[in-house]
Image (tube, rainbow, N blue to C red; front, side, top):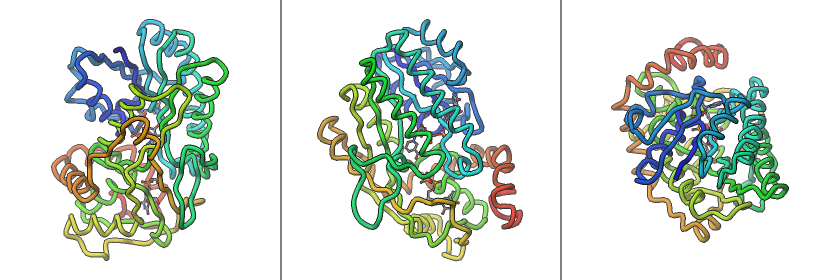
Length: 342
Ligand code: NAD
Ligand code: TYD
């Protein structure tokens, strides 16, 4: 099977590439323009695999995307390339619209023109908006995105589903909960806190810290993507999650215990604008129809994650001294230079 992955130099994409290459009859092309969030180090172990190829191309580059899809004769596209950080989207949504909306439409059109067998649109539970104290997101939940990031992802999903309804394009949409694991860019909360902990820096926690996220280990997510690719029904949406809700305070305390740090590392900071209160995924449909079964348990997978950041210091210290610093300098300037490695 010939598969085009977009965003393969990012966190989830790099795990997906490794998972796909475990299939002996799969060849993978990776379309990734290498933004601040991409990193060649994430794929160093597979870069020389003869079944792997990287195209440094933006999903918004219409002509080049067309040429790659024409020449690649792909059986499938798995589309992950995106601007992915909510806080950045709050600073300005335009790049989110360009990449996550226009980029998705450009890929969908090229896939259609060149007869790609299946298009997997990799999306997020954030498109459903925020839950109160009770309930879960199902595939039938209304789309009520609250941030420029989630609104742009919802638009991408709707374009993909519309392509199925209008043209009969073979599209599957997955919506996954919050991922954690190795190679996650340290702007997201778990790697941010772990690496700040390893550097002796404080952990910013937004608002009252009682916001709930539903955490899944990245390896379980990419297994779900493989199942959606190979077993999903065209035109269907599948929620992917691990039934693992935690408040941000609970996450912080679990990490403090693993790192041997005292609660005083947590520093309350101003809440995120429009901060979604709770996400919780009901993955019943993926379990029933795709045979999806998460394999990683929270305590053990969080331990593995902490261990990875402890043993891959070079990976994150080089990131934290570059583009990241510039963003966090602006974002947290009022907290002084000690925070976020400035
Ligand atoms: P990431 O930010 O770590 O990586 C994104 C990748 O996309 C980077 O390698 C970047 O270089 C690439 N990219 C960005 N703009 C591009 C463009 N115009 N053209 C080509 N490549 C481009 O993101 P991630 O956390 O790995 O998320 C991947 C996908 O999964 C996203 O679509 C995201 O919405 C979705 N998702 C993420 C999570 C999560 O918890 N991280 C949960 C559910 C869904
Ligand atoms: P994040 O990792 O940005 O993922 P998302 O916003 O897509 O769910 O944030 C996860 C939760 O952690 C979210 O409720 C915001 C909170 N958070 C903090 O409390 N402090 C931080 O420094 C960051 C980045 C996030």
